[in-house]
Length: 512
Image 1 (cartoon, rainbow, N blue to C red):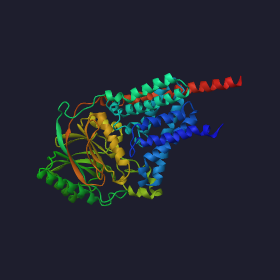
Image 2 (cartoon, rainbow, N blue to C red):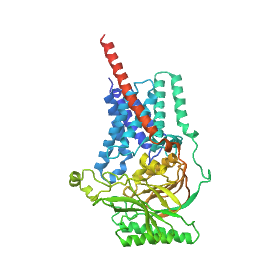
Image 3 (cartoon, one colour):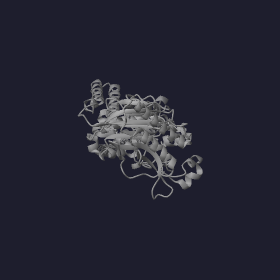
Image 4 (tube, rainbow, N blue to C red):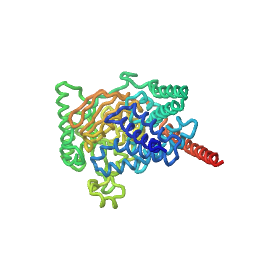
């Protein structure tokens, strides 16, 4: 057998990983995501299960090594280990593709395998890591509006379905079945355009109430792992920008905000323990004459030496009135699993001397006239956390984030892409407040209203609609994902049986 025949499957898998990665920032070409799925489908089409798993792992390795290249800031070892570890979920996609392509209805079955894999990796281990879901490659494509109906899992399914239909086009054309290829191509185009039929909220629609809200990006003295080495300077930067904003208001340059949003880690000096920090926050709130949602680090009550990462509502003159504790601290970033073992093996983990613990309530906070749904940093990637704040009454979404560790990488842009999809999914305006950027104001249809670039201090003031209507995706909740995952499991089982019988029949036929 010629060497190129042996290598064509793994080569297609490697290329598919690179193409998929290019669908995300910094390249951010959404159309490449279905092409990447098509290539991986062809690489695994009716392959032996172990071959499919191997091709999936190869594709995943390339994909995650490119997508998560920003982790090199933490360490090359962390980048490689996480990328290869998460490639095991891609191996599951490859295995499932090899099994389900044994079925006659494989173009529909394979996308459910993608949904199944994402459902699992979004939840485990350590609460999962949803970064790089197919849905997050579609912040502004014709498929994006489907998020309002079926959530992010539905968008993932649609992206993968377009990809498998394109694979069907290639297979039919190679077999000389031109009519079948044409029908598959028409089906791919129809699915790719289906989102255009979904209505989205537009400015002025239904005349919803609104609030004037300011977003502050104070910047940090330096980016990288030591972004908060001068914690008080970070706090002072946000105080200064807020006072400058009050002066612009006094001059009539911008409208007076009714609420102000500061980012995550804008006050790593606890205002409950440090009187000067409390004074400076109150000085900013008094100057702007509006409550400030502060990103703070505080001691977790009754938790010994543990911490909370909180969004803290600070009223001018009277101090804190409400707070939200981040529910999903980042493993190996905000807390250290297996501390007794790993703490002594990896010097870098000494930067995590105390563990953050998660809160257990959705982040619905009253900030001035706005009842905001607050999520903190990576929480924007988790379906249930964002959905719960909307279903619990959040009328505008706020993402308090700190990307200073990854300044100058593609990570902030990837997070903004997620936020754009969430705006569409939940029909809410989204305010992303980042310490060093990218801060952005998003309309409920995911369009960018205003933004601040990285490493530049500044403020944005926007009139933000406050919506109460729940999207279809909010009402359906986890059900679309559960159904797709269940069909994926069934497809793998049935496909495995069909493949086993087919291979058994071939062996019998060849020996007779």
